[in-house]
Length: 468
Image (cartoon, rainbow, N blue to C red; front, side, top):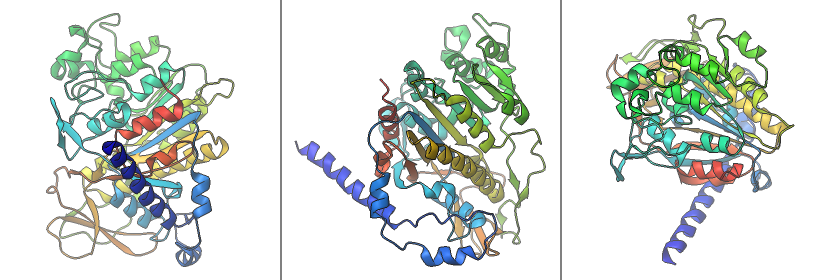
């Protein structure tokens, strides 16, 4: 009885905190363009005014969702969100992700391998993704296996078993940790293709009776839409079984996949067959470029479009809209589960590249805007936006720091200095163990309010979609 009361008290406190955060949030202040205009003065003067009690009540929906769209910004902590907002929308502006009516935080810790009772306070993307994908805490590097290396079912696999359509979209390799956790089970996240699996994941290798590499397992799980990079792993040969000697791409085609490689191909894709989009050999090139952070800082600069982005490469918003088009079928009594990842926020944070990091956050936010637009016309859709872990960029005063800094000129004409202090130039900046934001709208979104655990998201997804 005491433990029950403690649990109830915890949720009452969490709910009160979440409601307070929601009520304090300003209403719909996003500017429409990338430049700040006269409308921002009105935004600043109106920010935080008005009683939002009725708005919050209206946002709380019980029942079930026909569809779920989970947006995942890799490494997108509060500092990464704030720097993107400052740069693109202005200090008083709002991103699309800021407009979601219900907000909370969740904890992101991993656990030690073979010792799930002992926390690892700083997670990687594999362990954190396994957390929300399976409801199970695991060790860094693990893809949808528990701390002892045993396979655990994923939300996408369960959704498929229940007859829902499924999608997995990313700007990274589709074999990267976050997309991989939905449809693969390996003991090491590096086992992306058959070659790597033979070398690093003998337990999972096909020639040893395992399910194979991440690439092979994704094909075998067969989400209806699988979009991103990672073509090079599909060109590796299968080592055993029915497709021995053939490529993983051959296996995908035999599984019925329609393979697309350009934005035009993707736009032309039709319903009726699963779609595999491979838009780069590795990760997809990032959208923006600019000065990397250095000791002593940089001269104030603007970000510029990355000239290395192929004209044929679809934006994440294009992938998202097409995935929604392909998955939405009102002729069926079943809905869909879709995960969309903005992957290179994290990768550019690791590289202490503020323009790369901010450009990927803005690109990700455009996809969120497409998802929330879909939800407005399909109110039986749950939309959730979160991150897998925090990262190490910080907005700081433009003074000398012991770390690496770079200064950007925002769309407001003001200077913003970002600091990176967890690695030297040329090294890899570290994840952080902070709790991160989760926001949502639609049926069951109220369950994210307050402070939850990353693994709680799995239960919210299952409950929303009535999965067994």
